[in-house]
Image (tube, rainbow, N blue to C red; front, top):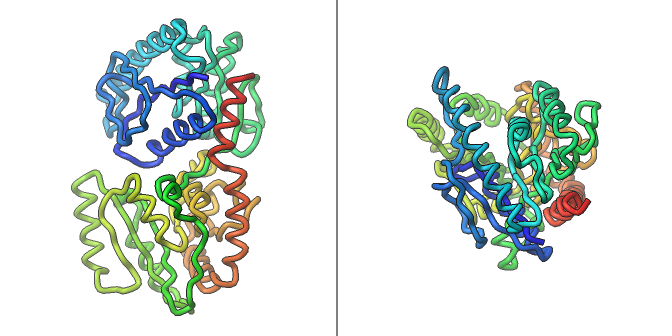
Length: 384
C-alpha cells in the first residue's frame, strides 16, 4: 500500500520529529511504501529516506504572536490549509497514494474540511489527534459530526479509553500512542535492558527538556537537594533554550550549582543519536512538571521512558491510566512540593528493591504500546 504523510508543522526537533520517524519506519517495515507531502520551504530535521512532494504555501510555524498578529497568522494558516487540502485531493484522485495520514492535527483540521473538496477524498485519510481536552471536546465532536457522510475521513485520537469524555462519535477511532525507542542504537545491537548497579555507584536521574524560566527549575533543585538519600545520587539536568533570556537564566543556575556533585548540567539541544545516548545513559527519568493538559494528551517523555525501559518519578496528572495499569515508577501529587520531595526520596532509597518490578512492568507496557502495534492499528483503520 502507498501511504502519504502530510506534515505541515516544522519544529527544530523533539517528539514530533521522532513521531514521523515511527510512522515511516514502522509502516515501511510492514511492507508499505511511504512518502511525504509537505509545504514548500519545509525543512526536515531528519532524513527519512522517503520521496517528498512539495505543496504551494509555507509551513505552519507556531510562535508567540499576540493580538492582531495572532489573528492574521491564524487566518493565513487557514488559507494555506485550504490550498494544501486541494493539492492532497488532486494527488489522491490521480492515484498517487492509497491512503493519507495527517500525523498531528486538531479539531481545526477537521473543521476546515467543511469548505474543502478533500472531504470527498477517494482514499482513506487518518487525522491523528494527540489528545483532546475538555474545552476542545465539543468543538471536536461538532467537527466530526459535520463530516458524517464522508466515510474516508477517519479522525483518530491517541488516548487510553474508547470514548471522548463519555461520548463516542460515530467513526472516531481511539487507539494507544506508541513508545519512543532508541532506534539507531538498537540497530547497532545496543539494548534497553537495565544494567545492575552497585549501591556505591550514583543512581543517575535524568531531567530532560526545553528550559523555560516558568518551569521554576531552581525551586525543584532546592527540593531535590534538601532530601535525605541512603545511596549516592546524581541529577542530570539537560535543557535546550530558544530565547536569550532563558539561556541567560539557565547559565545563572548552572554557575550557582556547578560545584555540587549531586547535580550535573547540559545546556544544549539533543536530537537523533545524541538524544538516544543521553536517555539511555541514565537510570531513571524525572517529570516534575504539573499541568491539567497532561491528563488528556499522552506524554512524550513518559512514552520515551517506557520505550527506553527507564523507571519514572512523575506528577500524578501525567497519563494516570498508564500508572493504574503498570507499576513503572512512582507518582506525586500534582503541584505539591512536599509530595514531590517525599516521593523522590522514597524512589531513590528503595530503587534497588523495586527495580525488578519496574523492569517487568516497563517490558509489559512496552509490548502493549509498541510502535509496530501502533502501525498495525493505523493500517487496520485504513483497511476498514
